[in-house]
Amino acid sequence: MNYPSTSRILLDLTNALIDRYEVDIDDFIYEVIAEYDKDFEDDSDWFDEEDTDMKDSLRDQVMNLLGKNI
Image (cartoon, rainbow, N blue to C red):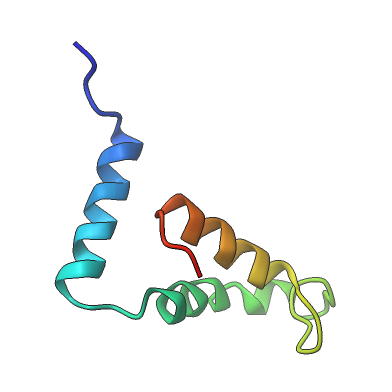
């Protein structure tokens, strides 16, 4: 048998919650990533208002994992 992995179930669960509660997933992911701001407050690669930064990159990666394209 080809059973689903825990990662697959977690993705399905996350997508079901997003759809059920009509979450603005882009904003929600960014808010979760922003919880790490205090750990990188002196790192200009973490956040750059004028350019793509690590926060943007992480958001894009999570969106891709969820199958949600920006």
